[in-house]
Image (tube, rainbow over all chains, first blue to last red; front, side):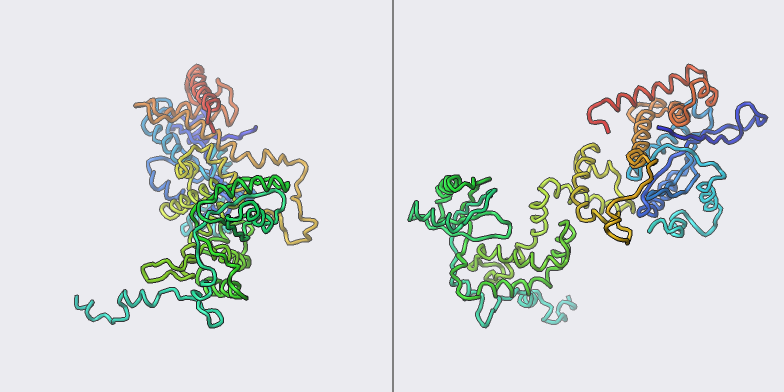
Length: 147
Length: 381
């Protein structure tokens, strides 16, 4: 079984010149609702994220594969220091992830690769984040993946 | 108070009750009570059973008369195909033994032979002419347009049943119930008419039919799951999670999946060809075309498998029952993520997380041990 992984580090690799910028650890979590339930899933996901504003989370990718829509979230566990010391903010992020996994169990949440910023999935998600007149459910309806 | 006094008399409940009373049927100018007078109600014991081979019920009744001339027996065919004999009240057990021996003698052993004592019965063969058939037709004609919810539920609950089937099903349902109609019964609004009796029986018809078709357990599960799904959808505007559905059935997630598979297998009969249908020649669309290189099993289960692994890892790094910092282990989650998803070796994980190699190794091992135990423990997903 092959699993892809990407961790996005705000800042840079350990041995470059960007010293002084706090490195943060993000991991990807993908929800895979069916096309028929994607809009409902997106609305629920938006509501869930809105209720947990203390955790850093962003939409990293939106894609379609067969009968599944993949909504990839990048969830920040915190800075490396917070992760190492089990800081309350890092532990809150774990609780948030647990909540996502439990609440959206029917959409098969799974750890996954955070899409490359140049990939189509990431670009769709990026355009969504910069769009002023569309939210995720609206976008999915436009893409007609919810039909 | 003034409003109540000003209210027109026609809205008073007593008048409404009179208006809503279910009418007595009149067929060919003859009232239903006159028709049923030909077949007065009796109290009987009912013996019913199945056989693998066909049985002539007239021969069975004749045999009962021959063995015991005092044993008055009747038979009538119901739509479910079971064999039934009614005998006078108190003689059910005797009739059962006689039927058992007779069935074996004619080479059609009785299966699941049971007696129900003290049931109402009318010998409808005593009704002359077409009175019975006309009565059934009139009853169905009156009931069919007024029983929309029952009809909808039948179509929704029973696979392979379409709207067009319900009228004939209702005819059989009415026919089956006529011998049980007790015309002398008094209700709140007077004598219980045939239509009122049938309306009462029809309330449970879809549920009984589904139970008969699929078994009590599967239908009970389906009803409970539908309630839970509806409740979650209306309350939280999303589909119910597995844990919520399992709670609705008061069972584990593993058992829930087994039960859901049973339900889907039955429901799938109704739509078994729809996912393959592409609007082309049916002869060529009987199967799904897939390239040879696709590992169908792996593709079909990959999403669920990854979700499974994710749940196990989350359970390993989040233990709310522990106190303080031990409740969540973000370092182990980060290390496991790097190890399981990217396949990084331990020293590299240590560099990425800026910890000592032994710390990274210990973090990954904490997850590995917990996940292994969860996998091996009985009842694990």
